[in-house]
Length: 331
Image (cartoon, rainbow, N blue to C red; front, side, top):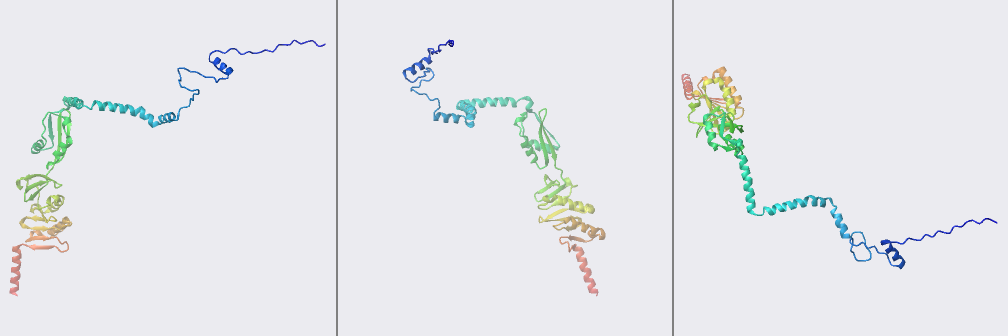
């Protein structure tokens, strides 16, 4: 007989009794009812089922809030709008605005009236006595004055508007001095008109009016309407005629088109419209060889370059005709 083996009884695992919420689930399973999870104080929704997914409106609102422009608007735009609204409400009253303006003006005035910003006098360099007086007359400043109240550009434009002034610079120098540096026009020619006698510079700009030609006898003379617009050409002609010395009396502008060179003894050299300097050089070359201008010549007409014309004086013309008549009668 085989020996009997010891047999072990099967182990039966019995579930432990549940407590708390698990007991509710277990009891529900035994009774056949659906288990319920009660989270009081968190959700107070009524109904048997709870869906954690957001609603369609809530989803669209959340997506809209994630837009970069909307986020920047809420982060930056709303504070700025709030500040602007607060400022607008504060300055809505007229008395508050006036108070702020008065306060700002007081601060501005206190800064501008500080001693280091005050200008006490004006210094003018490069101008004569008469011109300096004219500058002080056209720029009436009541010193002391704050440099903040000075319009330097306007002062400079006012000074350069004077005829004798060629250019000017205006600046505020340390020490409270308004410095005016003037470059005065230098007269180079005298222009005689029906209204009087004026001095012109090399550009034809008016320098000043004089009462007598004798005051500037060393300057050449021009005359005629529109002569001031061709001063450069007149100076070139006068430079070319230097070989004539003191015989030159001046230049006359004819018809606002051309020049006549006037010499002593009433002689004239009528120059063409085009290349007048070249025509005058031809006349001077003939004069050096044949002493043309030393003869009884009243006019040398160079208006037609291909056919120069010479007009004798009245006395020389009468002598010539008398001589011709005598010679004819003898024959």
